[in-house]
Image (cartoon, rainbow, N blue to C red):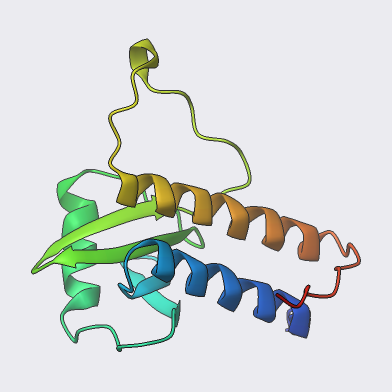
Length: 140
């Protein structure tokens, strides 16, 4: 069995930075990056600050099943707990989501923030998987 290629340190830096900024955009809420296994989703990284509640994996799995969201093994998702048991979830992807039906945006600002963060993470992962050279982080 061969080992998967090691993640470049810059990939980890950018993942943490996107999670941190998503948490800021969501008024300091914890944002988690989750990966689908054969039968559930499991946390792989969280934004800084408070830890995820112990019930988070169960709540997210139940929400995704209730919404009948297809969850391919290996897919990644961003999730943020809005209040007790209510989550906002968006996929990590490198393609832009389809426009809303009729051109009228109905997604809430929390969902849009996670959609954009998921797009950023998807593009970052795609770049590092393709072996592209990463730019050094800019100091702000």
